[in-house]
Length: 279
Length: 279
Image (cartoon, rainbow over all chains, first blue to last red; front, side, top):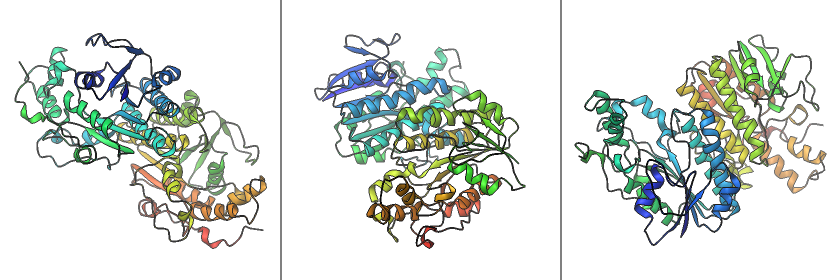
């Protein structure tokens, strides 16, 4: 199966490289704005260097592919409209339209928990405690918390439009990815430790404890995320589906039953099993 | 109450002019791309001539308003991406951001039945018959049938984002407007008669009968539409709401109970009472 990954050298794309690159089921092509991420070099692969805002470049890279995993995006909730318009809105239109023209069967789309971010705004910090009674599914109304979140709702929507209203793609999987982090922060202490490293908070402070609680709920380990992408690529039943990208965390407020049932998603990790960050 | 209407001289804007302009509850300002519609002249009003793609013009027109009714849009399902990107996507962002900056309390947004268009695609033409068992509410998943439909889902979504995540606007009403027509076609035979006038179909043909059946289901009479807008402007309870803009047609597949309950929407018209077009 020939699969192109956009935004390949970001946090999520590199999880796919780490866990699926050597899988004989796949022949990957990586598309990225540059030929590597400066802070996390993943080298030695042929790279299509292109911006998803460039329709012709995207279209040309899609020729001959069976599936596309579309992860390229502006990824921060504090972004303004001009941050998201070109990469996330126009870029995702470009991906769908190029997929239609080049007859791509399947598109896996990196959406985000921030399409549901106002539920967290409403219920945090109680929401971070074990046993809080909220479990969001693909059927709950979207409540984006930012231009970023809204731009990802747009991506989910245009994906559904293309699947239902055009010949290609046949399948579209919107993954509401929670917290996937680079290798060195791939644990529930990742965001808190990153904040310590950046001098923003102190280890052991109240802010630190909140970050840990939150990520114990939202963590999507790199191997679980890559496994979810694999389940989408191997599926041939779903036409349009929304699935939450989260590990099997006790504290999660995002449903994984839908992905279990339709895709056979079987995450191995649970944020609760970590008592402290790795040495 | 000072209310600005964008796209004021289109099919829906002129229904507001016809039925609400002289209502002493309102002081209207009309914003339109030109100072009148060439085919349907509504003259004698001060008009802000501006394109909603022009943020500064929109912002300046919003100063001092209590509410905005945002109807300006590219309105056809056969439009391509470049037709909808600037007027519908960027334009609606401009309206929300200008409303935030100028502290507008309330925005009424012209959405469309086409955000749910794939339900019709799936069930037509049986759907047009009386008694077909489908009633779509604000809780059903969106299934847009076109770039136009997707662009309107975007408008609904960014409206929710602004209401929930910013200080202004406080209220956002997404009206999924079905078939509002100009005065001369304001009846269930309107689309069929228009098609006859344009030489596209013959009166009494099967295509004519289908058009009539469809519009008996989707008709939103001008007075019912204006009344729905009035109900939104008078409401002070709803924060974010999605309401279907349709008359009380026997054949409708769009729910009006939600608008009845929350807004007191009480439509006077029903497409079924028309046996033939007006003489």
